[in-house]
Structure formats: C-alpha cells, structure tokens
Image (cartoon, rainbow, N blue to C red; front, side, top):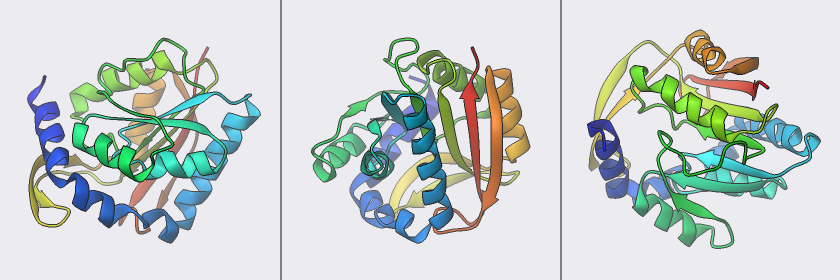
Length: 212
C-alpha cells in the first residue's frame, strides 16, 4: 500500500469515533449541500435507480442521508475503524472496507457515485487513476457528485478531530482543475459551484456524468 494510503487509513482509524461525533450534524447546517445531494438523488431516480456508491464514506452520514432520499446507497472507506463506526451508527445500511484506487466493484455496477470531500487526500498524480476507477464502476450516463475544498495549497494535517494525531495532506483545488481531470477521465461536467458552509470554509461541488 502506498505511503499516502497507509497514512490516511491509520489517521482515520485513530480519529474515527471523534470524527463521527464532530461531523454528525454538518449537513443539517449546510442547505446548499443538502440541495446538491437531493438533486443527485433525483438524477439517480430519473435514470431508473440502482445501487449508488458513497466512496470515502467515513462514518456514513452521507450514505444515510442519501438512503433517506430513497437512494439505494452503500458506503466504502479505506479505514476499517470508520466502517465499524458507520455500521454502528447506521446498522441497516451496507458498508465495506475498500480503496478508491482499486474499487472491488464490477464494471458498470453502480447507478451513480458520490465522493464527498474524500478526494482531498489523494495526491495530484493519483487523481486520474482514481477517477478512472469511478468511471469504470459507474453505468454509462450515471451521475457523479464530488465535494472538495477549494484553494491552491496543500498542507500537512498533523492533528484533528478531537486533538488526535494525524498524518495526511489536505489538498485544496480549483473547480476548473477538478473539472478538467473529470473530462480527461471520460466524464461530462454538467454543473459546478462554490459554497461557504459548515462543510467547508470554501467548498466546491461538481455534477458530472459518465460518458458512453
């Protein structure tokens, strides 16, 4: 496993319980993000439904929110401890340990995919490979929703979520750059916006679809 993946897994194993408590109600304070998730759910329903992957699901709050919108959502996360917490907090939903760099899903097996602030630790030179995985597992025409921090810098996070030690780089990116990566990976970008909310001091949201 690459160093950045090992560091990310270890860091989120360490903070999992505190993380779940601290982010539990963020969507309740983030109306624009709720609207984005509702629109994504509408797209999934309009295309006939089916399983939707929440990749980098953490403690499962977005997976559960989508389930509440009638989406057949399941969560995948690199951190086994995060998956334990997600299963504890949302016992009726499906969660599995996995890496976005090598998704254990069949080609075209999901009706849509969400990566909600989960690309923020992926190095620039690995983003293309991750998005290629997203494209591989999503049905042609299936919607993709990304949330991420907007900016131009990367910083090493050594402490977080209750003061626990972490070792992860947090990458902030401009929406135009993320959109270009998506197009290169075979997605059609349909909309992008920036928001300031409880989720992020400056967050980016991009809607895209997998090409044929």
